[in-house]
Structures are given as C-alpha cells and as structure tokens.
Figure: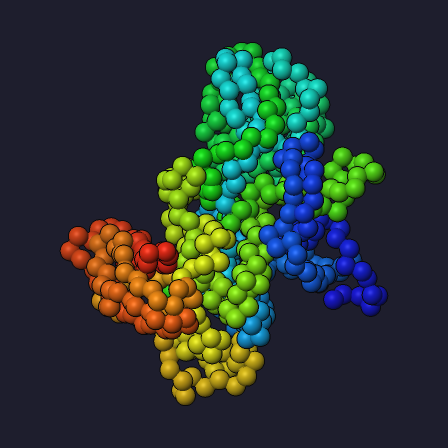
Length: 542
C-alpha cells in the first residue's frame, strides 16, 4: 500500500460498495435508481460479513501500469505461476477458502478470458429480465426500444429535429468524443451517437449536452449487437441496438427533415430472452490452459442495481442510495454470495465441491425455454457460457460433485510443463514433478471437459455422492458433432453419502466429422430420479 498514513478504506468511486452489497447487502425496502427499478434490494447472502481491503490510495497509484498489465494479459495471458491472482487464490483454497473472480470485460472476442486457473470460479456476465425502457420514436412512425435509467417526466413527446453526430465524416464526432460536436449544428436536436472510440457511454451524453443537444440516441457498434445497458445519463437518452441504429441512420438519410423523440416507459419485467450473454463478457478459450473450459459459469452482470456511496441526484438527505452498473465485476459477487450460502448450508464442502455444485446444476435455457443466446441473439457457445447460468436452488442439492483436493492440482501443473520452481511459487513449498505423477489438463477431476482431439483419448472422472444415500444415476450423452463419446460404466449406484465412484470417458473422431470445423460441443449428464448432473464438453479438432 502506497504512503505511510493509515488511510481509512473509504470508497471514492462506488465500485467496491456496489460489488460488496451485491454479495452480502442487507434487505433494504424502497430501493430505486432515479425512480426506476423499484423494490426491495438484497445481496445474495444478506446475513454474511464482508472483509474489504483497500489496496491503493492517493498518488502514486499508477493506472498506466495497471492498464499496461491488462494489455499484456490480453496479448499473452501470463502462466499461473506469474499471475498474482492465481497465486493468491491457490493459497486460499489450500485453507478451504472459495475464490471467485470476474472473467473480464473484453468480449465478445475469443481468447479474452482472464482469471482462468482451475482453482478459481471464473464468472461471465448475463442479462436479467428487467429492462428500463426508453423508446426512440422517429418521424416516420418507427419505434425502437432501448434503455436508460434517467427518465425525465418533463421531456416532450413531440418530435424534435434529429441529426447524426458523424454527418461531417469525422469519426471523433460520430462517437461523440469530448469537444467534437458543434453547438450550432446540434443545439435543440436529438443526436445519434455511435458507441465505441474509447469514449464512455455517459461521457457521450455529456458531450451532446455540452453542444446544446436536447437528447441522445446511442447506437451500439456491430460487435455489441443487441446488448444494451441502462445508464444514468446526463440528458434524456436511450441506448439502442446496432440493428436499430442502422435503421435510424437509414431514416436520417432518407429525408431532408428527420425528426425523433424519446418515450420513457419505465421499468418493465419479463424479457423472455433473459438470461443472455452480454457482449462485454470475456470469452474462452483459456489460453494459459486450453484444457480447462472457461468461463465456468455466467451470472447477472448487466444493469445491476446495488448500493452506492453517494446520491446520483446530488441530494443531501437521501437515507439510502443505489446505482445501476454493468460488468463481470457485477456478476462475480452474485456467485460469491451464492458460494457463501452453499458453504453455510454444507460446511463440510470443499471449495472444489462448491464450484462443482454451481457448475453441474447450471441452466442452459432462457426464460422462453430456448438455448441461451449471445449479443447477436444467436445461441451462445461454451466459450461464452461455460457450464451455463447459475441456479442457486439446484446448486444447493446437486446430487453429485467433482471434488478436487489442493494437492490434486500439482500433477496438473506438472503436466502443463511448469518447472519445479514455478510450481513452488504457486504451492508455496518445494515441488518435485519427478516424484509425482503428471497428468494432461483434461485428466483433472474438473466438472467440465475441454479436449484437443486428434487420435482417440480416454479420461477418468470421480464423483462424490452428496445426495440421497441410496441412489442410481444413468448417463446421458449429447455427443459433439463428429465425435464418438463412450462412457464406462454407463450406470452409477450409490449406497451411502460421500461414496465415490469413478467412470471413464473415451473420445474419438467419427467419419461424419466436419473437416472444416475447429470446434464442436456437447454434454454429458448423470441423471437420477431427482438430479441432473451436467458437464459441458468442448472438443477442439487437431
């Protein structure tokens, strides 16, 4: 920690307050943000205690160094022995402490996932079924639903002049960068801004407001697709999809006098496509260890209401304040709180057992009972969802778990080709791979499968019965296209709690394999009268 003074851990930007209250915030009635998303707020584990640490304050706190490290991680993610988060997490799980980490906000590009060590629960972000609707209405009668937290009741429903911020051909103007707009061109108008350019969404509205604009329509860039965020904008605004933005651009170009307004419709519950993977949620494959599928799980991370250390409207008499934020930082504390509840319910469970329970009980369908989609509204792949969307109640009674003791990771690390010294950094003790077995990544007793498949391969898994003492499970396999999956045995019988059973999985290519496909995906599930214990299967053809 920089400096010599004993500085109190006061939250100056709100992020720590928001995330900690998501994990363990108490019940608070009448929560809302600028009059929207009204209801009772609570964290995932409201009776838990939070230990919060401030790691930096004042100057110097070199953001440039932090950003440089992030850039380096994106270009070439560090091996686990050179990753401080992985090292700290390994020390924690050796003491029985569960660790969950945000998977990063660098999606939707592949190979952007961070915090991918197998002893960490790596969390991606999904949408929720609540939207705070702000509809862009055009002069031709077309309407496009978007989102915004700031919903002024005084904004007129009458049509106003509409202008595209980039009409001068300047890309900085198109993305509404600071000082890029002329007040003579946009005063009193609804301004269409493009997302991107390294300019924050709210900052774009600040620029429109500075130029005298009456309102902003913020259109997504192509890679963000249909993923929207509800923000506390500085002026009347709505955030619409890329597809909607293209239609709005087309309308502007079709008439000499384009007009528009924004209709604010408030909080609406019931988006049937939820949960969907957000565009920003980082994706696999997990470059430091491709044989471990990441992310492990997705959880609510888009437009999340949680506590905030200061009022958004600058009032001084607020007794409780909240804000809405988006990011895998919002998804991660949901899983942290759920893990705390599972540990309370099952105090004898190891961190790996808790992780397994969360992963094997996850949902793969959305509210309309179709496969979870991504920012394109297309079925999301395993690099986006991992095992699926967290289902806390099912995680509390998973039936079987894939347990891993801390020492079980040593043969896995030896198999990665790390030196004794490098593994020693992680384990904080002397390691000699020559004196222990070395296993391939896919042999780790992990609740998912990520296979590089050329010639046929066989791996084993061991499950522990945490359900009914007398129970029987049959295997159900959805084989990846072009892959034969054979399970031995195909039935598991248990007669006591904590009984362990081992099975093998053989993978081989079939003649029907698509010679042009890089990947294929499927699943393996052990099914009893009460439980479905599901593991995703990702195959890379080599």
